[in-house]
Image 1 (cartoon, rainbow, N blue to C red):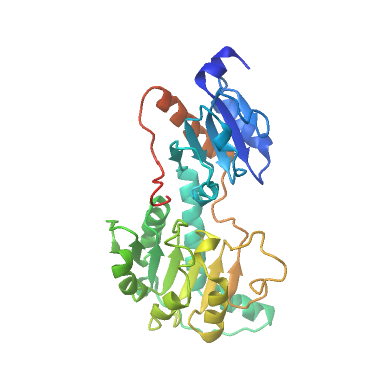
Image 2: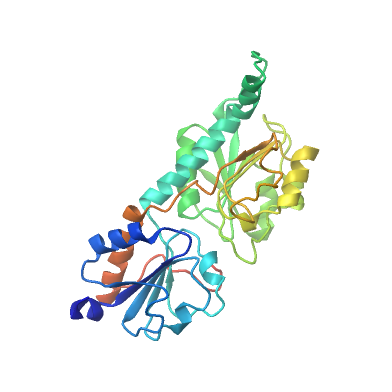
Length: 322
């Protein structure tokens, strides 16, 4: 550690549940003139100005007397707000082209899999059945509804349109996204739910969106499209979904199939009914993994810009929770 590293502001790195070595290496490359501290060392260190976190230990950040900015290592920040003792400093969510692209890849993959009847053909393969008995609609006859039209949702919408799908969208406040029929707020939700055949969920988790994917919402989704009952794809947060309602909706035909990347409890316990349900495609929170090499550079650039007096970007609004 050098005096220069202290002057520039030391970094507290707290990626709970992740291996720290890779993140330390990337910070050393991107910020060789800044010292990095791992918890529990330096919990009250006045030279720490920045915290780079994922699911940080509750109470950790409140002990830092000169903390200036909190950086989340994921697109979502609900994990940050789970600590009710957060200091009153700016919180910045990560926005990375790599992260955005990975999420759009996942969305396109899952949409195409359901559109082209992937689960049906995999079931036939498992039973050694050769049948060409399924009509397949054109992409232009399918509408994909995206819940959440932020950076991730807007990019996914653009890529789906390239494939020929019609796209509708819903967000808390009114958005204008090219080629997307946009709906907003509680007053626009019912019209949105009646608009699509496949629903992609990329919402942030807030008190207003907790368990928004529930029986009431499923019952309002259209059942008149080429796929029959709608398909649900959740790559947002596990807390968005009422999992009991999802399972009953599948069994009762309110939903024809689901792809779930996130769950209320992770890792998903072995006894969960999702593992073996024939209408469930399951991935282990892998839709858009945080890659150290692509996320650390923009974080360090923000630190440098902040110290030059430039405004922070991708700031989290504490009132809305994202």
